[in-house]
Amino acid sequence: MSLVYRCKTMVEAKLILEILRQANIKGVSKEDSKRMGIHEVGIPYNATAIFVEEEDMESAIKIISEYFKASTASEKAHQGQPWQCEACSELIEPQFTACWNCGKDR
Image (tube, rainbow, N blue to C red; front, top):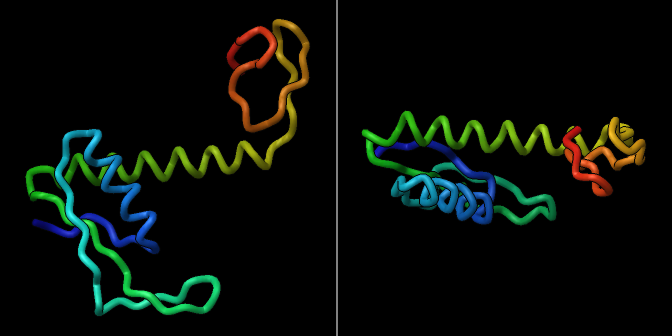
């Protein structure tokens, strides 16, 4: 098995493993005692590494990358300005990609 990603938290490791599992990629996590981190509250922790089979490496990298791109786009949407639906003129909060009133996509 080969290292595909180092996680900042155990929660992130579980999320990445689930995303890979849904794509039929078997991944395992191992605590990486050589890499230490500090939680926001000052508690030290060992990083968690995700490993996959060599033949799944390319797919796993793509899936993880797409997940983080989507997460970043979602975060940016939450910081944006409200938008007005072209179909019904309803004012919609920035995090939504479709109108809650008529269902038209942004």
